[in-house]
Length: 200
Image (cartoon, rainbow, N blue to C red; front, top):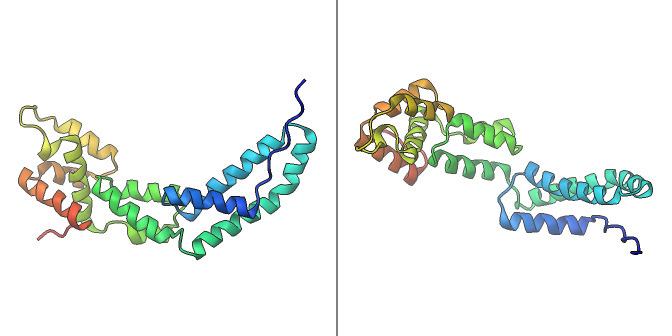
């Protein structure tokens, strides 16, 4: 008969700090993302403890202190600049716009990562030009509209569907599809170089 397994080691401020450092060394994160990572570690410990009634009660009793330790670690990482929601949001918004994501998609993506509404609004690409540039970036990636291959028949309804499902407004979709190929290429290249093209 196997001896009973020893109870899992309870998370501590030090072990949570190590988890935070390891995660942040690999990924850019918001405060909310880091909080979720640390809370998952605590929840895993609690599940392992809950194999019997005594362990379950011990885990329940420890949870308030562990949740406070998680909050303290998130505050620590935010305070030292390892986590910066505004910087994360600005970097991710630029990257997503360059890859052909609409402002609507970018806002939802950042909100899902716990970025506050005012921070999201501050980093969203502004103006119709920025949205058109992102739509054209997606069109180039999908080889539709002005970027369709010459040997393929035009399929404007399919192209409209691709752009509309990506969150682009109807007028932006129509502008993107009506754009001349050479001009479309210039706009996408400007987006890649500068992040927010200005049309002159």
